[in-house]
Length: 461
Image 1 (cartoon, rainbow, N blue to C red):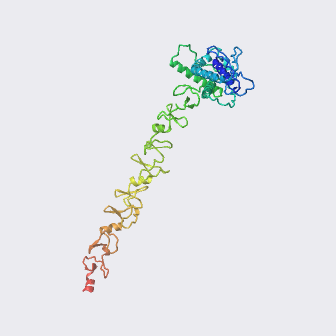
Image 2 (spheres, one colour):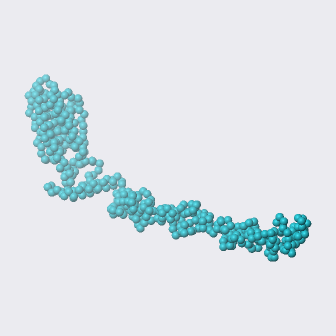
Image 3 (cartoon, rainbow, N blue to C red):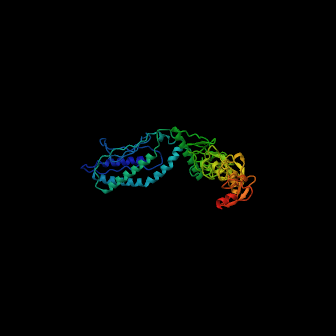
């Protein structure tokens, strides 16, 4: 870099004198001072103009650097304003540009190879880091372009080369705001390259060290917050604390479906986290009606578990109220449907018997339904008569059997008289005209009515 600065100084000197053309007299050209040879010895130099003090504006931008009093680059004597100066200056400028192009890549490679080693050497390079390096751009004034096209191309090439060199020096310029950081990778001897694995590991350690130091300088804590319960590695940054351990957010996963549980609720089973879906699917009791897992409220009955909305009557689908439920073959029923389906039936109305009942004639009866099947009158005294499997009162019983007195309509329980296809009390079998009893057993019949002999002869002669 020092030799490059010296070479640029000579270019600056040469081009500054070229701007002073225009004198009417011609002078013989003077011999140019050759640029100093390129060497590896360290030198310090800066570009200075040897022209008159009145020239404030220059054509090119230069890189200024404080000079060391050790050595001073020789200053070329000024050129005379003559017609041959322009030709000789352009030839010299072309030669210098060719030399710069030939040595540009070699200088760059040498700088890149020497830059890291210079940082790692003890005490070497600290002087360059402490120096205040700056890039000073001198405003250029308008200058009439020369008539030869070779000068224009040479000027453009020089501008491009100086811009690229300036950018390179800016990128490799170390910041002076803080002390230099010591390298984390140990230097290796020349000619003995380290293995690729060791180089990658050292580079990774260096990056992590620089990142940690940068975060610490910015006030961000970088201490480890514990070991992850999944990968058993230190945690730096966001952390999830659950189940008595710390986790990386991306490692706190559901044991069933591997879903991230960092910002959601979860359930614990045997020390393992589960998302709600997996937990309910695996460990929740099943409903006895829909066979789905029960997530919230639960009803336990008949030896199984139910959703509250599913524990209802299997007949009408209504939920059970305060009256409870009835069970039949393991299935719940409400009281109404249970009695309607399974309660004993009344022989009279065929309805279910809910409360009191009467057992008679090999059947069950509601008290209100156990009456005479003809007149629907209740049985007095608890006695009844049965005819063809039906309960009857005494009158309708005798009526059904034909044992009622044809005169008074009352049942004949004792002695009776059978005549005219009917039965009579002995006292009630009388002549229809004179009403005298027909006790002798002889009588005359007319229109299904009994008559005594005298009355029959008198009436019907």
